[in-house]
Length: 218
Image 1: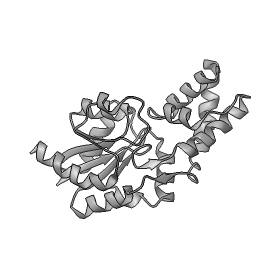
Image 2 (image 1 turned 90 degrees about the horizontal axis):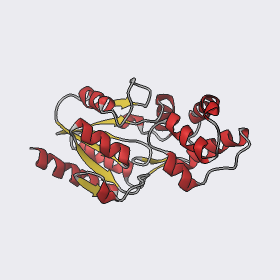
Image 3 (image 1 turned 30 degrees about the horizontal axis):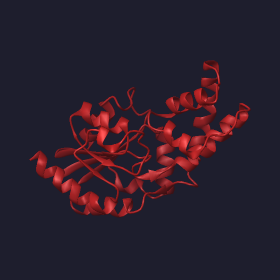
Image 4 (image 1 turned 90 degrees about the vertical axis):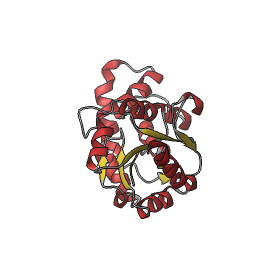
């Protein structure tokens, strides 16, 4: 059996509508126009500080505004759950993987408190033996340290990482683990430009892809 670790935003859940809502509250306080959903998806992927930095640059706000905007953004983030939904089939795939004996973990750049809040809201926490957020360790993805820590907490077995973005692909590459790419998330590059063992757009395919990844690793 394998250890299977997942990214969160853009992989298991579509959280962009909630993130956009709080981003626009932060921008309104700075007297700047709102961001679109497409812009929001483009800013996601490297943690809250980088999201705010990208948003700030897009709205011509100075570096000096970073700290106050980030503080407000993070304060709002913990309650940003009402518009977030799991991707179709994601929950069933988690249940199927667990039933097959795989051990599951989560490794995201989302702040840990916000991660736990959305997992609780969507009743997803029960699927994971380990949950690491973007501030759980001094490093965040694409540094491989959080991913290594997640796998270590799951014991032994093949290592498979499931994500949706350039950051996830680079994290898997640096960690030296198999990477399965969910193509319906927030990546900015063509799927073929990202190193991956297999790609999928339907979570019903994921259990079979995990089996295939295991065979390739054996």
